Length: 123
Image (cartoon, rainbow, N blue to C red; front, side, top):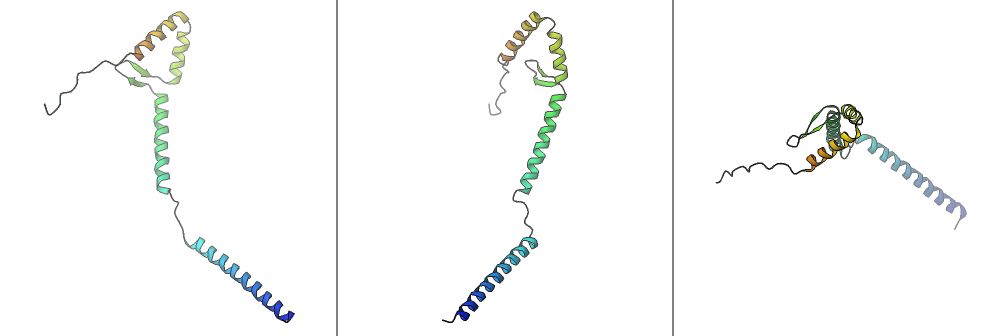
């Protein structure tokens, strides 16, 4: 074979390969910028973000306002500042504070009072 012919074949393959690669890159770029694909879980992410905001708002409210935890047992939820003030006041008399804490723990751990069962609508 003629060496000049071999060089021409190599150059033709090389140029064709480069042109094919450039066309492929151009097609990928065109498709990427012309097709807008929404996020896979965009709706779910929005729902989860709203739920998280609701939970955090409920937690902030629970930490800053008093409320009932169990009204039958007289267990309340206090804001942190109020609870710290009560703890500091109780710490002035440790024996009374210990006795009060033991009594409140026993009361909180006691089973809830039973309520009368509601009669069935089918009886």
